[in-house]
Image (cartoon, rainbow, N blue to C red):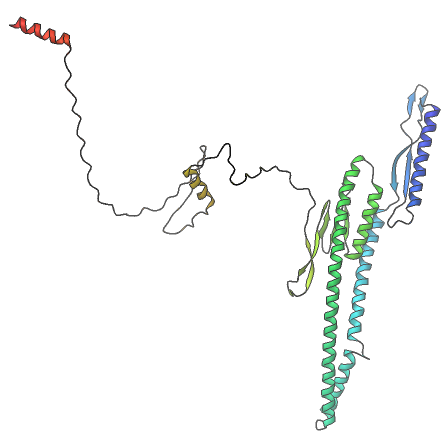
Length: 369
């Protein structure tokens, strides 16, 4: 059974956590993208005794942030649409100023030109009417040339803005991928990293205003970002890179492209260091002429099949690989050869009789006589 001292200690600890959370909220009242945090207090498992269950005080289960995922996604979508509309409105205002209205600019010049042409057509013999038509045509041509130069200047300005925007967007994409990695590691402890989540939401809101991204939450706590018709720019800890690439229809003007990237660590496969030139090895490797020929033949491409030559490869696994190739037999002229000399048989010496055989032969001769 919990004592009164234990109950009072748990209450003081819970109150201390609540005061720390409130102080953290007050300190970040002016922090952009900060979400208010709340300490969630729960009662621990009661202790059983013969008289029943007795409570053991209070404990803080987690510190959660006041956050709504649906409202945040809607805010990101609205921010993306507002940023797109604002950028389009700014460029259309510039185009409207270049083209002008019916009271000035190209519209007024075209009206004057049409009136002068009508007057010249009504009085073809009037020199003043014809001169007025020519002047109106020159004024209209100068208006078109001026509008074309100003539109080209506006396009160069837009391209310069894109170049300056690409670097900042790439850095923000890398920051989101890095925060995804940190959040995945932090959530392994079982508690949500509220401050890291707020920082990621702020970056996603800025990206939505710049390029209009769509976010999708994953089960491991990471956030995937997509642009356009579904091109991924952030997948977990991997971030893509935006770059300006030549347009396929007009290479003089760049367009925005996506290069898939990855932030995974490099492979740790060990590789043996190369021996310096001129150094002697303690155990040199000897390769026979047949093995060198076989390796060179394996690296060379196989011969193309033709009607006059047939080539095939037969691989036999008997400890080593052998490659056989066969071509049709060709009749070759045989060189004149001289017959080899006949080998003479070696004359073996006549064996000498032993002393006993000699004595026996002498005795036989005497008896015969």
